[in-house]
Amino acid sequence: MATFALVDCNNFYASCERVFEPKLKHRPIVILSNNDGCIVARSSEAKEIGIPMGAPLFKARGLIRRHGVVVRSSNYALYGDMSARVMDILSAAVPNCEVYSIDECFLDLDHLCVPNLGDWCRDLRRQVLQCTGIPVSIGIGQTKTLSKIANKYAKATPGDDGVFVISPETVEACLYQTPIGDVWGIGRRGSKMLIGKGVHSALHFRDSDDRWVRQRMGVVGLRTVHELRGIPCSELEDIAPAKQATCCTRTFARASADMVDVKNAVLSYAERAVEKMRHAGQVCRVVQVFIRTDRHDDHEQPYSASALETLITPTNDSRAVVAAALRVFARIWRSGIRYRKAGVLLLDLSAADDVMPGLLDDRRAGGDALMKAIDHVNGRFGRGSVHLGLSDHAAAWRMRQEHLSPRYTTRWQDIPRARL
Image: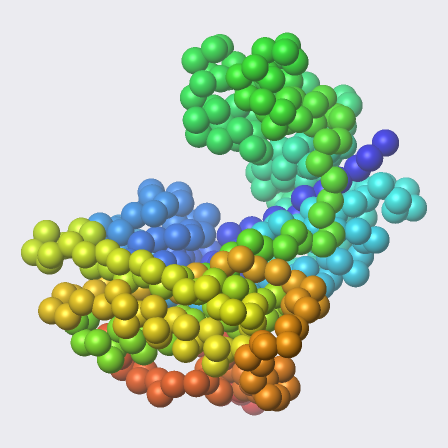
């Protein structure tokens, strides 16, 4: 019998902030989106006082002041590194796992020779907490969908247990108490349709007629029904599927009509996009750039433009990609307009090892070695330590991060100091 576990980090962004600031424990915390615009993550305490998810910061300031809520800008360097530490512990504990998101990981428990899976998961939970400071919840079931449901029960487990097993004896009750909208893969539209047809819980959906489900929700819906019945239809993906596109887009801290400002933003985004592409071992053939004004500014003339360039040779050389992005930018730029957002998309990706160089290819001498050297330096000393263009840290396009915590684990200057 197959057995899966879903390990989910509790209130992950807030938990990362608390690891290095223990005084924040039990205090309500909210994490903001890019440019400190909206609330994208909340601690349990922030949820309890009624701060809504996705709310603009200015609308929640009353609640924040009244309850002493701690506000933090998104610290992606910290969150990404802490996630990698958690995932390293989980992957070392089992023969097969799938990192599903920055704070979730599926484990294959099928071949573990342990007397009690629940006790084993509790030990794993304690190990993650001891080594990283991040609390996790673990749900166990016969399928990935059932382990997702079990994880919701694990989060509601009183005390410090944090582990829940959906067994043959408890599956009926668990599915009956799970609203159809909480079932993995159903989605908002599917949930609305099913409720309209009288399907209100995961149990009702599990017991639905296969032909009826397939007619209304296709093969994907039918697979979910089978997974709720304990029949695995979704295996672990230990190797992530290759990306079809890579992008870097940002909203500027404030609108800018300065061509040099916006051009430097495009240059920076192109560098970041090609860096991510190299990390995935891919090359691109198409470079696309877009720029646009603020959609919500009624006083600004609306303008949005996008164009692309096809490269002769697929590449992951920053110099070639940035040059193409700047050529595209020059074609779509219009003066006298205050731009608020820009982005670079790299399309038609393929594996770097699969590209056969042609006789007339314009391959820059030493390009591979140079890119490896740049990535190595940036990986050791921090992103942006080496880059192609001049970088103004006070530029209008730079993200607003007024509540940013230190990058405790990835920057030498931010390493915590112990006081004697």
